[in-house]
Image (tube, rainbow, N blue to C red; front, side):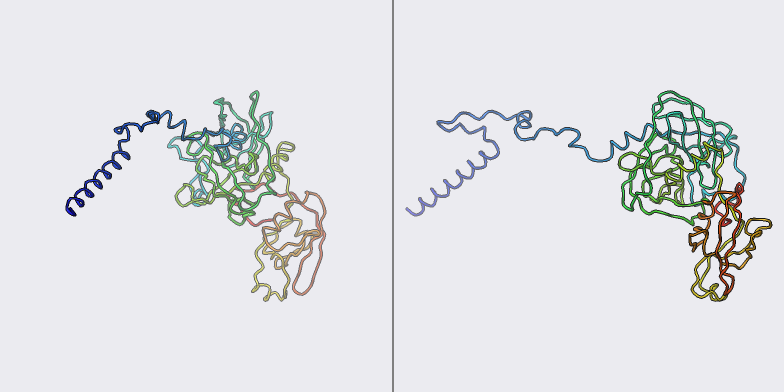
Length: 393
């Protein structure tokens, strides 16, 4: 009897297991239970209708900076400049360089860059090094239109050039406020890298006020990790609202490609330069005619200056405003007007901001004596190419 009961129990167990497997894998093999309606076959279409939520509107589904790119991109142009070959010698491209993109093995060579339209009457900004020495400048808009551009003026010391084109219905970029930028803010770089066509890359503001890089005489760069490559030079750096905050000008690269260290000229600097070039054709800056250097603690001790802070005068040009006022090599400039100076870069900016033919009081330390001189500010002479980034004020 026990043997029969054991066989019965095992048989029931096997049948129940088989029924469970069939019900799980092939439920349609089983007849419907009495009193229930047959379950209809579930197709892929009805499953989607039942299981999947409705697709949200595009404005909800998409995140990113498409509105900013749409607002700014139409005003960013590609520039092709025909120019004679450069002379042999060290170029900024060895370290800070994408400037013209790939070199063309022809004469004249083609320089590739970008630009930004800032007014409806055809004024656009780019880098001076994009159009420097160019005999012919071709501009292509994002809508496919092409035209020639003329140079309104250039400022090699900030690497800004102003061009003009004549076309109807030009898109114009909105100008932002570079002074309000903070490290960590999102920015977009827009240009024509490697001549592949207009491209938008994103990143953040990595640093502000970068200087002493030896690129330009006047440096106050926005540093960004947004990818910038050959051909982006002169293009737009925009904020998250699509407003222009900088003109892309250089990258730090050993290979020529982006390493995540790019530099842009702040839009307020570009706007000041453009205003001067449009009005006078030249940027007039103050000049006193001194060569300067850092005042190190060792030099301060040697000159018996104590804890005085300032800028060391290494040389004075003959018949320059500083020479006529009585400033001598070895003096330490401590104040220009009512503003203290503590570095050559700061002195350069303070002097350049002075109006030519104006008068200014200059405070200095000569040994243990504090002295003040009144001098007539001159106009900074046009730079020689080899003097770019020099410490002459």
